[in-house]
Image (cartoon, rainbow, N blue to C red; front, side, top):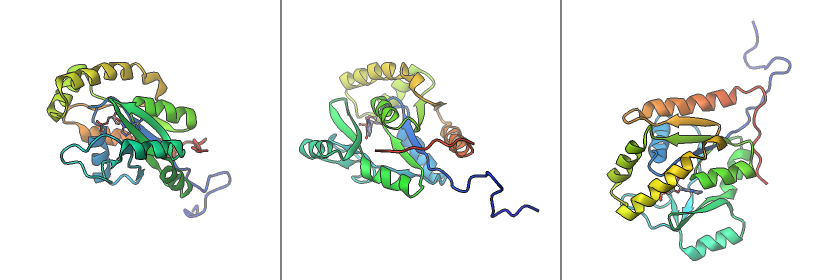
Length: 211
Ligand code: 5GP
């Protein structure tokens, strides 16, 4: 019998970590999917991003976002401490660089949640990242979700919808698409996990590196 602990000749010994990027329009369900994946025990390092947006009711600083002033954001940006940053609906959002680099260096899979501009920036910086686009099945469903949040004014809602239409046009940038059907979050999570499993089974692994 083959020794399970010893890979055969030519069989890789080391698992290469993945840089997973979850993106999609505001209201596509990125946060709910991440919560669901965490409940199901997906073992990834999740990077908490920095924003100048004020917290929404129920949001917790350090868990949902690191909330900073515009001055502090600018300091981080100029200091090169952000891997990518984007202005979304008048507020700045950015991914801290160092925690991502350190987690990948430890061999840990990393999960980033960014808007489509952020996904494009990560693709340029790190072509080996795995880009996953999450979308509701229809525009009507997206509108329903944005309205259900009750956090956006009608003007804001219209802005988000316009941007969502543009974002859907960026689909070719991505490696995978997951359709988030109503009441079928577990299915979306299972698809996400399937992507992670398949990516770890690649004969030629992607090797995400960040300069
Ligand atoms: P919200 O204000 O609804 O939490 O987020 C607005 C948009 O900004 C969402 O599409 C969200 O995924 C995106 N976002 C959150 N953090 C980041 C980040 O660090 N970088 C980029 N580019 N987008 C982000």
